Amino acid sequence: MNNYLVLLVLIIAACHSPKPLENSTANIVGPESSEEQPGLDTTKVAIDLDQSIIEWKGTKLTGKHEGTVKFNNGWLVFSRNRLIGGHLVVSMESINITDIPAHEKTARRNLLNHLVDEFAVKLFKVSSFTIKQVSTGTENELDISGDLRIRGVSQDIKIKATRNNKIFFSNFSFNRFDWGVGKDGNWFEKRLVSKMINLKVKIHLKEDF
Image (tube, rainbow, N blue to C red; front, top):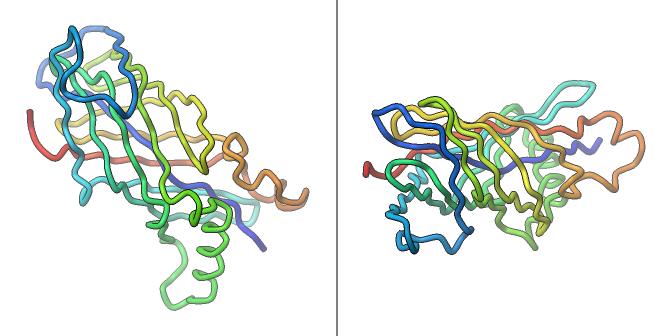
């Protein structure tokens, strides 16, 4: 039976500073963001691709499936040590399954082929998240709004994130139907597989700043 699982994305961010942050809100314009922005003293910091990872989980009436997907590019933008933007790119060709043992080759191949088809990986090799707005509350917590792009479909999404020095975390779920994943499945499949997908995102900055 087909399993509809979404993976990917997405992201997150935070601020890197040993001092508590004041409440603030900042905006930035997407992927073109750079260190040079009029009126702002900004720093663009690359993410560590080897240590950053996304864990995905999809559930169904009979159980669940889990796996990982990797970033292939990304940076966060800071102003006075506060996160104000960023752009994260995920390689859909890096989809991995972690809950099916390696010796169950047929089951792993069938699920992977299904996921590749559902995400149209041959046409859309990457997904992305562009940070548009960040609101900071306590020292560790951020509310992030941005554009999540999957299968060529862009939707605004709001997530929460936390930081620990230069490591950033986010744990959130989103509705896969909003990006067209599994939306055309039959009635039975739609009822068996949850439309909500959970993502656990961990991002390491490549360097201190």
